[in-house]
Structures are given as structure tokens and as C-alpha cells.
Amino acid sequence: MHLLDEGLLEAVAAVAREGSFERAARVLHITPSAVSQRVKLLEERLGAVLIVRGQPCTATEIGARIRRHAELVSVLVGELRRDLPMLPQEGPDGSQASLRIAVNADSLGTWFIQAMAEFGREDGARLNLTLTDEDHTAEWLRRGHVLAAVTSVGTPIQGCRVRRLGSLTYVATASPAFVKRWFATGVSATTLRHAPGLLFDSNDRLQEVWARRVAHRDVALPVHRIPSTQAFVDAALAGVGWGMNPLSLARPHLQTGALVELLPDTRVDVPLYWQVARLKVPVLERLTRSVVRAAAAALR
Image 1 (cartoon, helix red, strand yellow):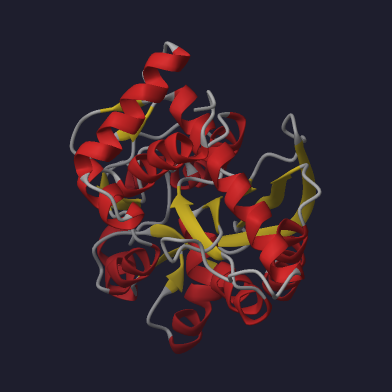
Image 2 (cartoon, one colour):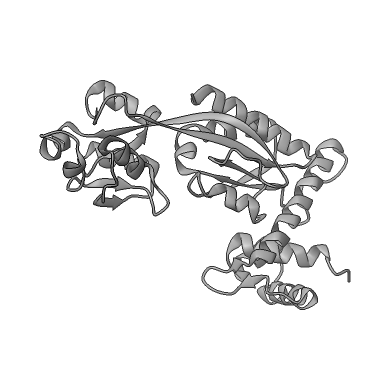
């Protein structure tokens, strides 16, 4: 058996993707014991731990590179099947090519679904999305965890090509009742220190950036953490707090008066880029075209 035997690579990739040996076994149509043996064998051959056993199981840095390699092989096989219809259009386990992509939640909640829809109409490859902040999606590329990413990093990452997509505009919003209660005397460092804000997660800096811009100083903001783009808007509508919402989602509510902008002319534009592995793989080119077109229709 070759050092990088396809069966061993697929076992590592399946466990990393599915999060457990049992689910990987179902996907590969073998027993969990067989999956474990294959992973252990490759670990012994490479002299490195590839899978951190736990709930869920996760890939180490080397394991993530193994997973990426296996997924690339799957993509290339998928291209061959596309070009040669006489070949079986599915693998022995019924699998098709899967592209792992990193995307920020607000892009997914506003425009990226349109890119997926267009891509899906002309391509059979599946997309496996990983959600993280736009400032951190590039790290997934650097580590080899994904083949492409929507990111705020405009400098090409090693091994990647970059395309400017446009800017996602954010607006500081709250319900009229919330503004009346917390900002009756205006928006200032003092009122911002007391008014509950909304925070997506620990990587979210938009509220902090906006507060510094309008108060001309750093402000310690009390916040509710809500890791959902739509729930972020819903929380603002319900008067839970104020937050930086994508303009495309907030606009209908601003027009009806259900939300109000805290201060005029203080919108924040976040530039977005598409970084994709520098590989001559047609399916990545097709995905890139769909992403660029969807972004052009939705972003500034």
C-alpha cells in the first residue's frame, strides 16, 4: 500500500469533515473500526497526529492539509467525470466533489446565497461552507483548511489569487423606542457606555469601530452576543439593543420607521475580497465567476 494511499486519505478527510468516526464510517460505507485503523495507519506512517479524538473530532494542522489534498483530488475527479460522461458520475460511495469555502456570516445572510444558486445551476459540485468573521476567513486559507474565502484581506495570501468584490455597508440602527430610552440626550461616549449594544461574536469589532469614530475615544460597550445575522436585525427591531446591521437588511425597516439610524453620515463600509487557491481547476473558475457576479449586484 502506498504511503499516501487514497483510502487512508479519504478516511482522515471524512473524520475531519463529519466530526466522528461513526459518521465517517457511514459516509464511506465501512465500519468505524476500519476508519479508525486507516487513520491510525496513516498517522503511524507520517509520524504525526492527524485527528484529535473528541466530541467532535477535529483535524490537526497536518490533518487539515491531508483533508484539503483529499478534497482537491475529489474535485479533480469530478472535473474528469464532467468532461468524460462515459465515466460513473458518482464515486463508489455515491459521493460528489465538495468545495470547502470560508465566508463571513453577513455575506452569507445578504448576497452569497445568490452566488451559490447561480453556481448550482451549472455545476454539480457541492459547497461546504465554514462561517467566520471576514477578518479571520483568510486564516483558514493560510492553514490550508479551505480552497477559497470571502475575506477583508486584500493582499494575496500565498498560493492564492485575489479579486476585489466591493464593500458591504453597515449602518448603526436601533428601534425608535430604544433610541428614546437610551439616547434621549444624544449619542455620546456617556450614553454609549450605558446603552446595550449587539455583538455578533468575540471577533466582531464593528460596533467598537463605530463608537470610537463618533465618540472620538475608545468606549467600553455593554453588549448582548447574538451570533446570527437575521437575529441581529430582529434584536434591534425588538429593542434589545443597537447594532451595526448590513444596510441591505436594515433598509426596509428604515423606510418603514421600524428602525432608525443613530447618527447620519456614519455608515461603515467593509471592503470584501475573494481569495481562491491558485489552481488550474475549472470548477474553481466557475465558482469565482458566480461569486463575482453576485457581489457586483449586491455590494458597493
